[in-house]
Structure formats: structure tokens, C-alpha cells
Length: 340
Ligand code: TXA
Ligand code: MG
Image (cartoon, rainbow, N blue to C red; front, top):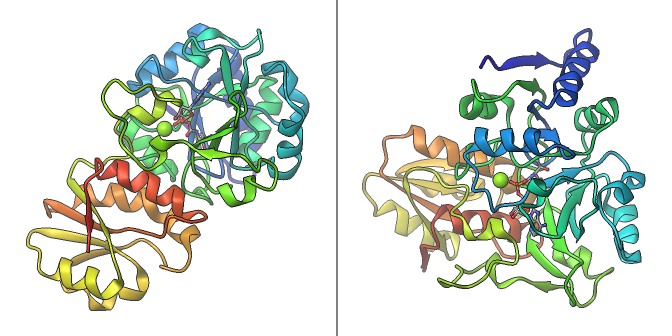
């Protein structure tokens, strides 16, 4: 199929959004920028539309999708038995990168939730995404708009590289501001559980959910046979095709270690780049996990374009937004960690 590239410059924006909304109303698929990563959207009310998302991405059928709404008022359309704390969280963090897992409403089609009786919901903070939901009048199921297993797309060009010819259209928006996917928490369990860290941090959430626990799969590999609280956590994710190691340690130790490697590239912090004598890619500042998050997936995609066979990535701190970056990196490294 031909994938239409719909541009959002002044003069084109309105027509592009209308065209995208028509595609969605007719059961098609449209990639759309959000503040976290690009999403691949389809109507959350239609099993046939949602099937096209799974097919285009090559996504395992048992990995459920996030439903995107434009307003907290839409929450009751997609979820039921909603606890009060969900509304307090929505008031504080929506629109924004927080996804809530709640009991599934009846209108949402079963394949969105991969047969679970829960649904993941968020209200994105991006004008294009919000306008698309409003104009189409639909809650939109949307996973990240990458091929399953490859790094999430933070630029329109990443979507085109992965999905051209497989989806109906791409809204060619700006680069994503946050750069890692939303924080996912479930309010269905007692105590509530953080399933995937993101830009809304565990520290921020504990003001509302003092007993929030961090699911063990956030930082560790699931043992074989262990049940995943969030099905997405059991898949290898975000991975470049190269061999990746996550390296923990001080700057000096990291630089000395990578400088002794051959046929390798270092993914490093800006403030240590001058000390590195092998090929290197800078992914942000050591004291700003936000900058690391924003550049992470572009850097992981670049690793594959280089000749080096192995990448050594300097690990961030596991606090604040750093936890989200660490969580993606440890998966990209298939849990191979070197502690210096
Ligand atoms: O920032 C984001 O969340 C992006 C943008 C497009 O909104 N979306 C995204 O979707 O990252 P995806 O499909 O790549 O990741 C959704 C994650 C998966 O790990 C999935 O297993 C989990 O959310 N999830 C979805 N529904 C769930 C449910 N009912 N219970 C538990 N986990 C769920
Ligand atoms: Mg994804």
C-alpha cells in the first residue's frame, strides 16, 4: 500500500488532520506525533482497525495497546469502575506522559487489550495528537510506531524508515519532546504498581500513591515461566541489531574501559566525550536525564548505521527520569551489564 505523508505546515495542517481523521473513521492506520514517541493509531472501537496495527508492526498478539483520549471526560467511555485517585492523577499529569491501567470499558474492542479485562489509557500532550482524537471523534489505540522490537520512533523519519508501505498515512510532525514512552501504572492491583517508568517519575507518583511498588520486571529480566504484569515487558525491546553492553561506573572508569576496546562505539555523556578516543555518540548530559531520554532512541538507531560491532553505553542514574532511560537501555543490552 502507499503510505501518504501528511504535512503540518501552516496552510497544510487543517487538510492533513482532516484526511487523517477520515482514514481513522474508515478503519485505517495513521502514525501521529505525541510528546513521548510517535504512535501508530487506529480506532480503539474496531477489531478490524486494531488488527492492522498488529500486522503493520509485527507485534505479538498478546501485547495490549494504549488507548489515547483528548480529555478526562472521555475516560468513562473507555474504562469503568474508575477509582478516585485516577481522576486526581489525571488532573495533575494529563495531558502528559502517564498511562493508567484500569478495568476495561465495554465499548473498547477486545483486541486492544489483547483479551485482558483491563485497558491502558492516556491523554497525550501534543496538539496534533489531541486534534486528531477530537476531529476523528474516536478514542485511538496507539502503540509506538516502530517495527516491533526496534527502537521507538522519536522523529517522523524513523516512522517512515520502519513502516513506509505498511500503514495508510504518517502525520509528519516535529521531533518528540520527551523521547521515551509514557510511564505506565496499574491501578487494578493493590498496591498499585509501576509497570514501565517514563517522564512522570515514581517520586512524583508517590505523592498520590504512597504505596506504589515498582514492578520487578522494570530493572530485571523475567525468569522463564514468570508471568509479566505488563505483557510488553517480556519482549526484547528497543534493541539495535548490534551487540550492546550497558556499563555502570564513574566517568573516568568508563572512559578508560571503552578506550581499551576495539571495533566498538561508546554511547556517552557530553561531559566525558573529550576523554574518549574510540568512535563515540553523545546522548545527553550526565546531570540531565531529560536530555538522555530525548536523544536515546535516535542514538540507538545510529548505532546500527556504524561499522563498529559492539556498543558500550554509559548507564545513567536510576532515579527520576533516569530510571526510564535505564529501563530502555537494559533491554537494548538484553540485560548484559558491566559494573566497573
Ligand atoms: O508514550 C507512549 O506510551 C506511546 C505513545 C504512542 O503514546 N505508546 C507506547 O505504546 O509506548 P506501546 O504499545 O509501545 O507500549 C504499551 C505498553 C506495553 O508495554 C504494554 O504491554 C502495556 O503498555 N500495556 C498496555 N495495555 C496494558 C494492560 N491492559 N495491562 C498492562 N499493561 C498494558
Ligand atoms: Mg513500543
